Image 1 (cartoon, one colour):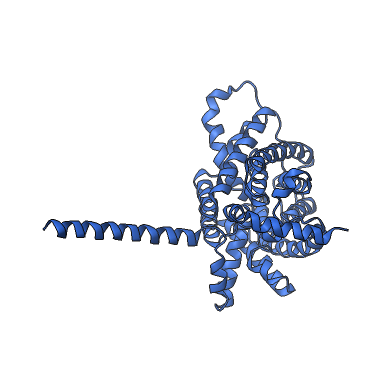
Image 2 (cartoon, helix red, strand yellow; image 1 turned 90 degrees about the horizontal axis):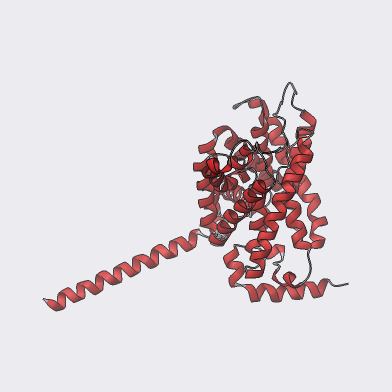
Length: 384
């Protein structure tokens, strides 16, 4: 009797251990870049491949590359605003299809690298439009702007490759500014809301009474990367980043906190702090350096914090400058700051990951010796 009980206990313990291993294996398959999915999708229908490419493009906006994370982000956007999410979905599909028609590199297309700029352009057209939701004429500039992003990306790529820099969201920032300049706030067909500078904080309002709202601005900053200002969808977006890379999610929150602190130090308006607008550039700058384009270490962690500060201060400066003519600063600050950080030389250059080998931060950390050796060989082969 006693022996039977002991045997049953061992079997139950073994079953629990097997279950834990299965759950862990399943979670590992769903995290990171999910490279195994690309091999599985090779023999599938083009429509199914296009869906995966589009979902990867959605996550590229927030420096990730995971189709499951893309599905979560898309769900968050539809939760926040179905109309704007529809525009974003249209944008990522149009730009991806344009890249296929133009014969762009298949690895770049399947990795979503030609989808995220188009998504941002379409998404922001809906955000800035003053014609209201479900203004169907807006689909026309959304499609044209998304397709144009592919042309810009294709043209900028060989120029930036000379310095091993990513195209990033340069096409989005250029196209959205040109669109807003062309249409103007009073355009009869495509009117938009003019942007105002961050301005000054009303010092008659005491900060300690609004401290909880300021703290809520930190997770909202992550959502503002997708122009989403609702708390629930923003937390879901943060969860999608966490699924891809816990290290990247931690740097997203850290950069958002830095951006919020910078907003307080520059006494920007309360609504910029509460909505997360003062923190999203800091989040992007911190994420780009903190494990994505540099392998993680205590040095690059400090470097990421410095990048967040510089991105946030630059965003306030550009917002004040462009706001005088009614234009948004978008993500110019984080894009320019990250490009500058990638060009710096010195001891930190040894932590730099070549653009073609950038993957999830945890993967970069595990394969440090391999990419470092390859990076050294590449640099020696390109020396003049």
